[in-house]
Length: 437
Ligand code: HEC
Ligand code: HEC
Ligand code: HEC
Ligand code: HEC
Ligand code: HEC
Ligand code: HEC
Image (cartoon, rainbow, N blue to C red; front, side, top):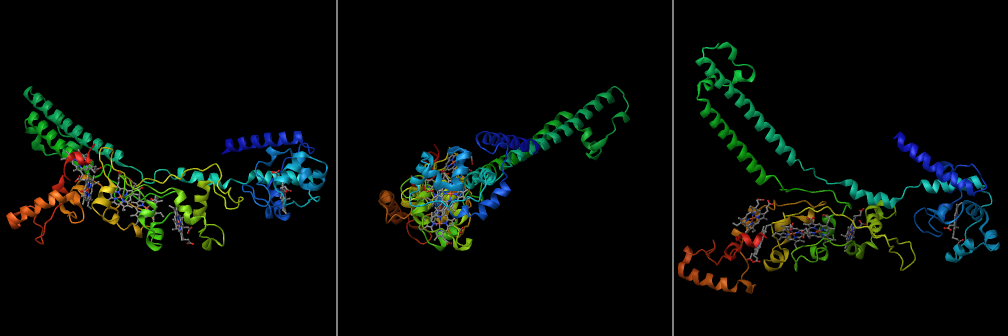
């Protein structure tokens, strides 16, 4: 902190010493606190904002555009400055044709330098927003590696202890043969609690069986762990950079999922909508009621990301500095697995909710299913496909009808209700290559 303060001090000293070089007020360093009071009492804010264009220009960085001397003259009496034929004054006046700034002859040069210091001290709301998503970081910590290492440490510790025991019994039998003393090898420490009969066992068999038991235990645990825990993210619900709610948009407002996830019927991926899709409504809907007439801070994030400002002149509301919003990805199969939305939504006619759960009730999306291989296979084994409305299954359907006629309820196509039942499994839905690259 101390170092940081020194850097700021140095920075401001540099800025203001360079200001004073060019100004008539040599040596005066602006005071942001008094500047803020002057800004308020002189109503600069009724026409200016620091970062946004309002009636007058945004004043951030005004010292880069003009010398302090010029700014002092301008604020005290911009009319006189214009009449003197000053090019800068005429240019800015022309740019804001139709609006003229008041005269402030009451303000002294130090007053105006205070105001400039205040302007410099106002933080940029846009960078605060941009820092938001990055600062969130990964919302869910992945502890799997730690668990893994801990398990390994425990297993090795047990092996180490038991091998120590084995080594002792080996030594003891050797010593006994050579008529050594028993006592020196009386069990100590943890070894006291191990069955004493172990000591009389054949050490080779003992060590082999101990290693096997531990090995089997450890392996099956690691296997179970690897299969069921690593990479399984069921319930994963990270905080998103904008508090966008499916419960509101898809639930209450009943916007069709496909309005936003527009590729879900035609492609592998469902796609996440661009913010321009949101702007179809949110140019107008600013959700300002809750915020006393101010645009909702969450909607402001959309505007900031698109560099959109409703107060800019018509046709110029979108600036040139859009920054993409980084939604945190929730569902994510490993690279070796292939999943295709159009196949399931269009061909199979499945509802989104069958796999994603009640999204229309979720404030924050969470991963509803395990997305494990067993989950895919279960559904492929059990779920019937709609053969009537889909000529993709015509040949299979004909075969099934014939088989059903011949074998009755012995047919593999016999469904519980006596009708044909064709599952994706019967149509190759269990073939490794269909789901794996
Ligand atoms: C009634 C509205 C109004 C008020 C109040 C006002 N200004 Fe201005 N200001 C303007 C307008 C409009 C311009 C653009 C030039 C023009 O059209 O005169 C401007 C221009 C400026 C500029 C030049 C900016 C540039 O980018 O070239 C500065 C500096 C400035 N104002 C500072 C102030 C300060 C400091 C205060 C408060 C003490 C203040 N203004 C109060 C309307 C206002
Ligand atoms: C107004 C636009 C909009 C509508 C309508 C909408 N979504 Fe979304 N959806 C989004 C946005 C934006 C995200 C990314 C942010 C998030 O996860 O909340 C998203 C994320 C998702 C995700 C998680 C994506 C991932 O990262 O894995 C799923 C699943 C999803 N939506 C399903 C649905 C379903 C099902 C419906 C219809 C019931 C629906 N969405 C309606 C905009 C929409
Ligand atoms: C079909 C119109 C429509 C679309 C498209 C739409 N919204 Fe909305 N949104 C609304 C309405 C209506 C509200 C409720 C406004 C209110 O409460 O006053 C709202 C509210 C919100 C809010 C809550 C604001 C608050 O602070 O309460 C957020 C955040 C939001 N939308 C984000 C988004 C995002 C992000 C997208 C694009 C993925 C999007 N919206 C797309 C109509 C829409
Ligand atoms: C058969 C199950 C299933 C159905 C039905 C389904 N999804 Fe998905 N969805 C998935 C899987 C699996 C993933 C992960 C895909 C990946 O990582 O490649 C996913 C991912 C997503 C994503 C994240 C972006 C992407 O494409 O990877 C969105 C958004 C999404 N689904 C929306 C929808 C919507 C909207 C519907 C309904 C129109 C729907 N899903 C129907 C299984 C399904
Ligand atoms: C809720 C049920 C359900 C789940 C869960 C599901 N599927 Fe399917 N899947 C179907 C149905 C129904 C079909 C038949 C539609 C078709 O033939 O294209 C199908 C077809 C397929 C096909 C095409 C098979 C063919 O006949 O060519 C592939 C590949 C596939 N699914 C992959 C997956 C993967 C990968 C997952 C898991 C991530 C998954 N599915 C999860 C229901 C499901
Ligand atoms: C219906 C689609 C589907 C079929 C058919 C399928 N797999 Fe998978 N498989 C998956 C998915 C999805 C995953 C990723 C699961 C996960 O991340 O847990 C996976 C993961 C795996 C893994 C990695 C281990 C794991 O659980 O992460 C292996 C190995 C594997 N599959 C082998 C096979 C073999 C061999 C076959 C053929 C007998 C096969 N798969 C058929 C969908 C399928």
